Amino acid sequence: MINKNVLVTGGNGMIGKRLVELLEHKGANVHIADLPIDLRDRKTCKEVCEGMDIVFHLAGIKGSPQRTMEQPASFSVPMIQFNANMIEAAHNAGVEWFLYTSSVGVYHPAEVFKEDDVWKTFPSEHDWEAGWAKRIGEMNVQSYMKEHDWNRCSIVRPANVYGIDDDFGKWSMVIPSLIKKAVENDKLEVWGDGSPIRDLIYAEDVAQGMIHMVENKVTEPVNLASGTGVTIKEIAEIIADYFDKEIVWDTDKPMGDMKRIMDTTRAESYGFKPRVSLEDGIKKTIEWYLKEIA
Image (cartoon, rainbow, N blue to C red):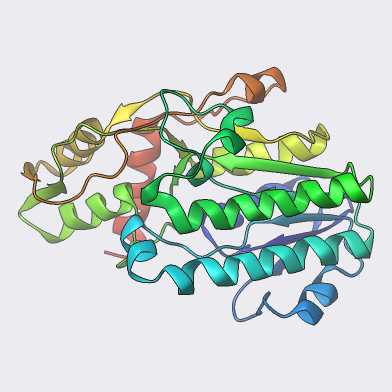
């Protein structure tokens, strides 16, 4: 990466910031394309890709299952637009490598999510819009690879990502939502009964995985995950113990898919494994939140 001109879309986001730091440490000349830049505009995408050697396309719309249910068009349509624009612009600019960031949301509920099973089913009803938007992005990448013999693309599918600089607002995911609740309330209210299982990965580990796949020129889709399931109850207990709070279960609220664990065999075959444990990652996230936001 030394002296390479590298573009990171979404470079001010949770994963993007960690990626930018790691790339700069490797000696890359990093350029960021993030809001207010509008990647729905094809001309803008063309401009940001000009002169770039490598493009990491992370830009997306942050959304919990609640948001995708309430604002499906506002969530999915722009993502489909700027994914297509960025893929086209990167190809036309002749970049050395392009990485597309997909999501665990592309998968249908299963015992374990394996990369080659995606197109055998539909996305989960709880990730319908987001899942299809990300799938269409993957299809666009693979279409360019096939039609133009453009074998210079990586596709990564991160699991449930968390960490410092996460979104702690209205549309936050499980870990930032529970941390915020624990800070602001006497008791920790958790939706459901705590039984759903999730596969969680720290944002810095995702960024490391992205760089690893590009450096190793991996062209097939790869899950970036821990490969280990943890229940919502276990996550809540880690957070409740940190703040010494009692957990209250709201079983009238929705719980989402019951199990989301990703197979990591392919990632491990390329030499990638996450480094940050769930306990350490949650502790780092809490400490950052208390210092920077609370």
